[in-house]
Length: 117
Image 1 (cartoon, rainbow, N blue to C red):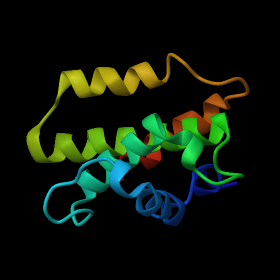
Image 2 (cartoon, one colour):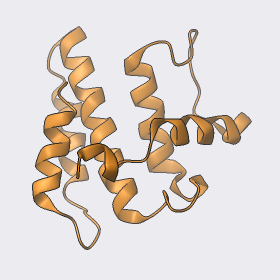
Image 3 (tube, rainbow, N blue to C red):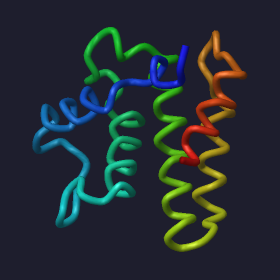
Image 4 (tube, rainbow, N blue to C red):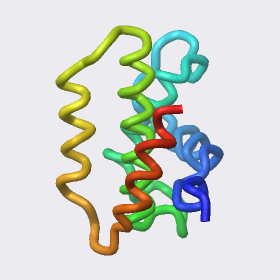
């Protein structure tokens, strides 16, 4: 199985963002034109609105894996643009401190590696 098979598809995240409408995370000009902005918005959806994701994508473990991917993707993009942000990197580490039951730690390593590219 590939990492993608364990993550919520990007189309589902984009659809959820549209469905949130006025309650959606605030975006600047260009909306999702910037990969960093898209990653940031997806992180907010996964943290604040996981119950708004459609089944079968709203399971705790799938939300955990997807949030882990997108937050670490955001860290990587920000690192590339602005250098290391210790606070942001600490937040990424904190996601790993509260895993749901049944986490596959080998898969977590693969997700972290995939977020770097």
